[in-house]
Image (cartoon, rainbow, N blue to C red; front, side, top):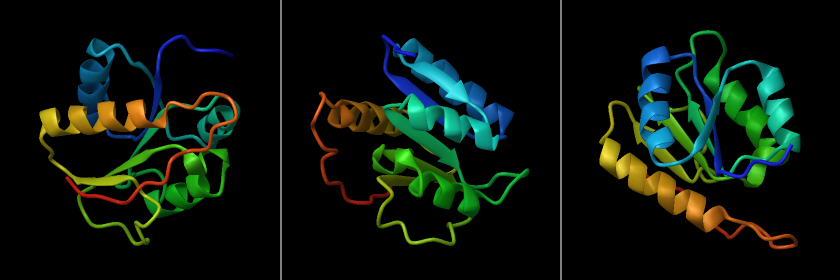
Length: 135
């Protein structure tokens, strides 16, 4: 499947967070998908999004395990933003950005736009190197 818009995958079971993010990013022209089931990661291994947003505080599954599954998949080179209430139990060296909840929506939107714009790949190009960061 080929998407004409930039695609962002949200992995969260927090409906309020999903709704807020989806409203903001849809207004910005992004195509949003969300879910927590393992099959959504499998689907997006074949249909790569431009950005993955992971709520590490999942109720239905250990967010640290989901993070590891993402990093062990074809999504490992996709920019990743991790939201947290409690700091994750993994090294964030491969994470593009971690954001403590609640967060400033304008700073979040700027970060999303920067990550999506810097991650655009033309065929044959590799993902640029990134450093982990906090906002």
